[in-house]
Image 1: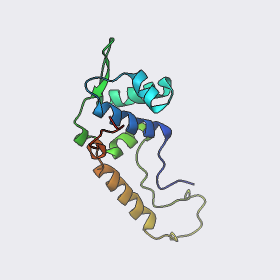
Image 2: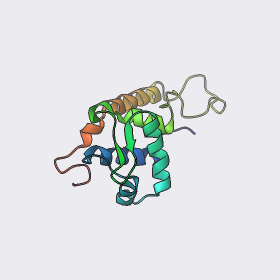
Image 3: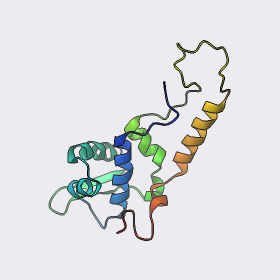
Image 4: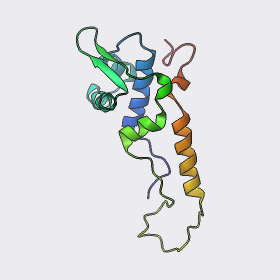
Length: 140
């Protein structure tokens, strides 16, 4: 069965890493992000590589290097990040594969499509900047 929304571990890592990068003064290292989040540096590196390749973050080499945002936090939506990591947002009107369903009309009517549209619009309107608190993303 398909789901209305499914957020992978990699997408959750991307959201949290972007929040840490956004609050850092200058560049923040892969090691510092991974240690703070308690995750594998290798898994984080794969996620950061996708964000870098798609222009959300910049990288610098050397002892003071690491990652910084390549865009303003107000320009980065959660839908954009989710789709970069997990692929296109679902827009199927059916929770079952069409080969399984025997009905001519969905018992849910337009509910599934409406929910998908609502979630997509909500995630499009949530920006990285929305999660900045007075103390910073991680209480800095």
